[in-house]
Length: 303
Image (cartoon, rainbow, N blue to C red):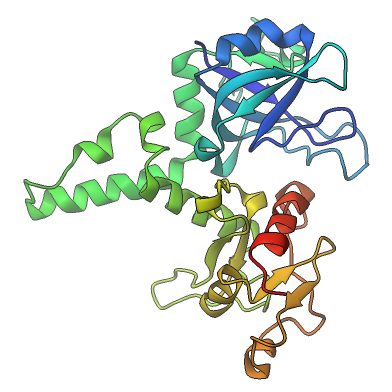
């Protein structure tokens, strides 16, 4: 097993859904095979064209996940799918640029003269060391780690000897599979993508402590194998989150808000945006994935 970088952008050439599968040609089969059973980090390249279907172009690492297996693409010769463990996929709380201050997270991307190694950068699948992997993860979850460190300091100051401190200092990759860590990271990432604003009402409330009141809702529930992905999330106020989880409101692929008229009182419906449309992130790579919206309409929404 070996850790790796998977470069991905959603476009007509490759059938990627990073939360579930990675589509690749035979060229990278050996490298992907080496990553089976281990963790990878997703990297988003520069947009190849002005077409919005080219994913974002943030030039940054944006998520981590574990590779479960490889299957052949039966429709496209010499192509394969790396199947991702959905329960391990997790967006970083902020994208991580591939270099900072002239320093590269991947040593192979830097030439001896300090410039970028374009040849290495052009490879869609790249092996990385455990130390490089850890550095990227620490940068991607820097805010979560800062919160945990502050918590640890607070606990140490109170003298609580029985507190399970090992849950705070355990290796980061182990922490990313723990429910409390994942919930916080998902909440922070979704709130950030929606600028702490409810997507259905437009309300942006900040409490007296400076914290946003908006919540992070899963479109496809975690109980139904929904991933902790921004594209499977919506920033919603508490009331609308409750209605959404219980299928009393839903969302069409064109972002129209759907209401179960027989179950939602007019007073609640008036909370919704006047045009009955979601407020979504400008970056299309962060907007709700139609695949998850369809699941919610078909299996959760009480139309």
